[in-house]
Length: 410
Ligand SMILES: Cc1ncc(COP(=O)(O)O)c(C=O)c1O
Image (cartoon, rainbow, N blue to C red; front, side, top):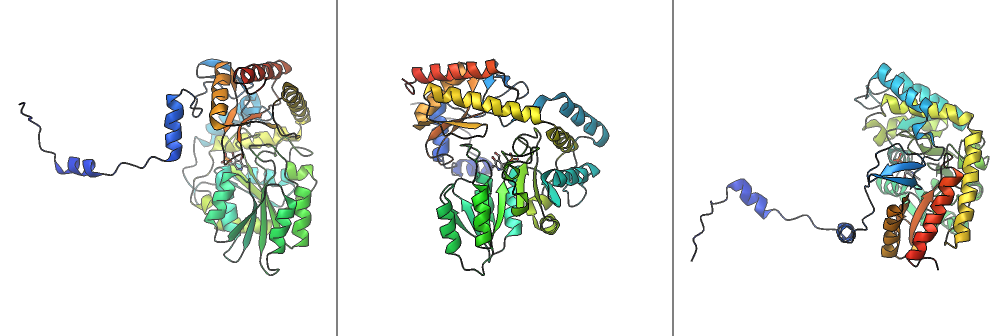
């Protein structure tokens, strides 16, 4: 018999031993499983700027899954603007916009943004997610009703949860369903219809014209989250609301600097009174630090570029049409549309993840998307104005080859 000479545990060690282990969620379980299968698709490091071709996991890869629609993320003028702002203002604001974190650069950005979007005022947040959280919870009260599209972005869903208002959800892009919700609401109740402008995962364009018509009929107000529309849609990049010429009929437009602006931050534009209200009630604005000087300067430079970026917008549309045609000719199941977000619907999650892994191995990056973000597992592809015909044709060829190998295409 062997004798053990283990030291008795001290109090801290006893406590640590007693601590319950953290429950493993189904998401973590899935992550562990996909890691063990070698098909885990998240947190893959890039070691270059987000351009049409990147280095990802140490290999050359065609980038088909960014939100850098106009390709400005490594534009020399944007880089110059960021460097100049750091030299002038330093690296960070170290405080909330409400107190010590407002720079003259933020004030200028808000003024330019409001003018660009054709609204009286604007206020900037630290991210687009924080913009939705602050705007929706800050503008609604417990007597209000929020009527929200089923496929709205997660930040809108969370914002509705955060708000004291009641929320009802209408079927995605279904205007009869929206009207049923409006009809069922007492006239006296304050109503807010909220929708993405361009739906982020499937690329469909909201029927903003019908939404606005219904809002007028039922005396509701409208918020459009145009994270994926501003920069490349509309007359000079003012987005999907501008595409419909309806800026004066939409009460608030929320946006982000993290996509076409190639920076970081969020914003809302609207009437002076609404913006003044939000500046004092949006908690995610008040209780979070301001975007850094470099991010504000990049967003300002992006706005300047947007005004004269017709060539980039035209090129993006051409690239979108070419890629959409390629994907359709190959026989992929997609959803037709005009935006640079092109979904390829696969169906089964594991099949999609295997397809995704093989695409990466073959040198193409796409966004793997699983339910409930989409009804069926999908690879989301997105275009940039700076993709060349060669990039796109090669990407379609690889997609087709890998899909055949995975029995997604015959
Ligand atoms: C529709 C929509 N709204 C808001 C956001 C959040 O933007 P941000 O990345 O600036 O937090 C996103 C980002 O994916 C989005 O797609």
